[in-house]
Length: 572
Image (cartoon, rainbow, N blue to C red):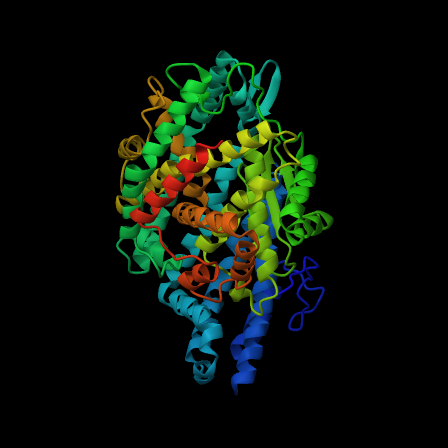
């Protein structure tokens, strides 16, 4: 079926077109109307669901814009206050109504007559939310939402000075590609020392979050936050034991290839031993890849790249640009990281990132571009809840786009040699990220199974986990003080706990999608778009099946895919 980037804001039928959220008092009557409305037949129930969906979309978009504006400028206290106001003074009032509306839906006699194929995953999620809701968790969740955002404020002000100029940590990373090894080491140590300045603050913040999360889990009847979070995230199709098998498979089947990659890199550089500040460097006389100069050029070249892959993908980015839904350049005061923020009412999402002119920024841009395509494709679905797709599917969308786009990077690289270097960089990144995914995920399992741990115990557990998934090809001697706090650079630990194993599951699926693409690009892209257009209306295994995949992250699959990538690396 044809897809369009001419995305339209949802037309309101329930709330006034000029309605904006200012406080709870002017929002509450709309919840009251839904709670009090009689539902006399199936048609009335479906209209009630559409009205509820409209209200949810308006609230979701308002909250998302508050977060976008705050992360774009963490120095503006008014933006921070607007964000905090929502999570402290509006969201806590919404939750009891949401629970009562959920119960009204499930208790309605006409709900049984709804089309099971259409509503199954939605109703399953509603029942899950009812099971987990506890009024006593509302103030804790509000406090947690505010605390989580403090990480971005703290990290956003981090910067270093080098040769009389100030650089954000993202901008400073460019120097790690410098051919002068002394420069690389200097920058590495400056960045690590700057992170160390806030290490105690972040330890304290994380400790507060762990305590809050554990209390929330206990209130909901769980022994620990890990098991609570698996339920909350709707992980119906895999369990913690599957994650532990993934960790073991990374150790057995991925680390050997990671060792080969870094040993090869050491030989290319002609140095020994390879140190952490050498991993992004090029051999003497080889200039680092500089695929673009600024965010404007990054966008232009990505649009050109997407045009070659599928014109619809390019049109989506053009539409976002027209709407002002992009903030790409790194600058001081901007929160770290990158994201694609779905906007339920507008449809076209917002891409946020910290580009500094590096090859990795190209990967980030096409990655977030994949998320954006997912938002465009799922926007026509009838209910907001239908657009809430599983995170494992969301990351499949983004990681597949990284690999699909590789053959179309000509706008970034004007000769074959640079294209081969860029492809090798991408494929190496696909593999070398697996041990970090396993490290972060395994660490979280330990943290929340031992919620009363001390900072010293946390550090010991981190170092043990880090060592388990570290490659001996990189010499880290003398750097333990920096390594002990290296988990603090992963914002997911603070802001979106347990959202990380998805990257590993989806990376495996993305490699499988890429295999499809190389065999038949048109068929693979059709599978890709058709699966993403389903949003969250199917179970995770069914969505993967629509994409031409099996939902599988078993050790055997990991072993086979590593061999595939190893063979491809030999051609670069």
